Image 1 (spheres, helix red, strand yellow):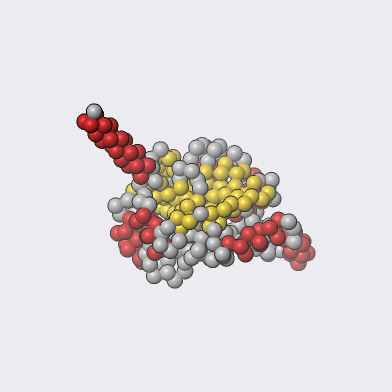
Image 2: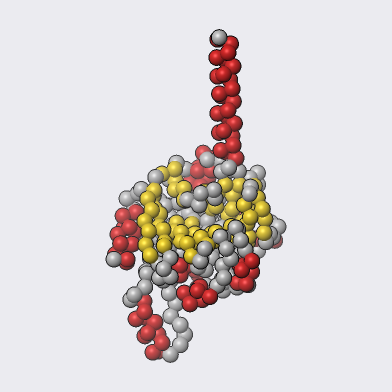
Amino acid sequence: MKHFLKCLLIIFYILIFQNNSNTAEKKSYFIGHAYGKHGNADIPDKSLKNFLEKYKANFIIFGGDLTEKKENFNIFYDYFKNIKFLAVRGNHDGDLFNKIPFWRSEKINGFSIYNLDMDQNMDFDKRNLENLKNNLVIQHYVWFVRLFSDLPHHLPNKKRIDKIFYKIKLFNSIQIPIANSMYQSKILERREIKKINFGNNNIYIAGDCGAYEDRFSYVKSYYKNNTFICSGIGSGWANNVIDLNTLEPIFFDINGNIVDHNCKEILGRLDNIIQFCLPNHPRAKDLWDFLIKETS
């Protein structure tokens, strides 16, 4: 009888070990703005490094701005060279694809992934999106920012009367701080967003959120049968990565410990539900208050 029980215990522990191993193998993350806050000397960001040491990744997609200075890419690459990863280039990455092989589409760990490589003028062939289905579509710039907010807003270089009407329109806009300044890049306005065929059941993920402490670092919306997400690290208190299996944010502190978070929803200007998420942190109150004020 003792021998039988011993065998059962051995089988039980083997099953538990295998289950934990399989779980570990499924840890796939999207990481936006990996260099963290501006002026950060740690490569990669210290909180991200601590997080990945505790919650090891089997696969990572980097959403651009891997390092603040393109000359430091070798330091970044040496740290991640033993982890399977893909990356798209951000405005800080320079000639990234002269350092790693360029890729357009890949299938890894069951994910079909498309690299929507573009410049600051959002220069890409929008017709390519029509043929995409069930893809993770990865980019750095938040060119679909109008699904989330009317910030940043650029006054058109037109007649004075046009500028006046434009400013009047802003009084009825959603002024929620999300993405970075877009570095004077072209903004696709709502009328342009409406015309785009985004394909079917795709997940568009941009990595240029999170670099400022006074902005939402994770936001998600559903529009035209596709999901749109912006995420990134660098705020110092709302750093997060995306679990690619759930599309949910994982917020963590400077020591890499996962922290609880809350999410709130509002209705966007394109009749799209927008979900904002923040960690349970004292700094979150101001942003939640701002969200309520803007949408009340």
